[in-house]
Image 1 (cartoon, rainbow over the protein chains, first blue to last red):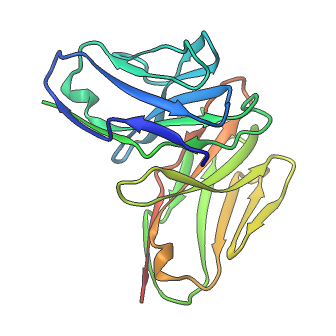
Image 2: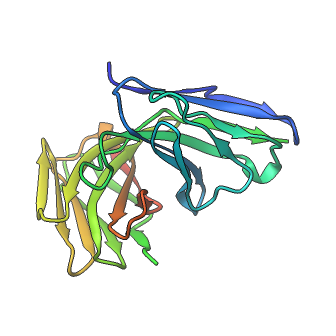
Length: 115
Length: 113
């Protein structure tokens, strides 16, 4: 089954404790992206990757890091989480160049709470 | 700067009613527009993708239209069912060279049995 898998789905952590949210897709997609969803603000892009070793900032990259060492994986790293990073996080992927196909496939989401 | 607006924010309808959800965007320079469904505690499920050269797309009871010049898209749901209850999001893909979608904040739909 074609899917985007995120882990963990739920996480409560404390300020400053480094954490990683993993994302993996089994569709051989070149494009992957991270979004956060906050009430009243909708979904906002954090980082994206057009292919292995190619990543770039989205609209709200501060406090986050990503890596794309393998095509299927795109982890989101919070080096020193703060309470304003409490949010619902989504990983998404798409085939080819996003401008041509554009259909995004989303993971189930990871709800992160930073105390 | 591209902005996407969805009105109303919430909508309740009786089962069986045909309904229209609205999406407007401020800049007509887009590659495509996508409609998603989001259930509570779940991810986003793609419903329909309309490329900028298309006027509409259909899937089952769903029909989405796109009018780029006026910056509007509508999602038509025929014969609504309680299982259609969810939040519906539209998103546009600007053709300005950025690799992202810009999302509206959604319409929360409740279909009453």
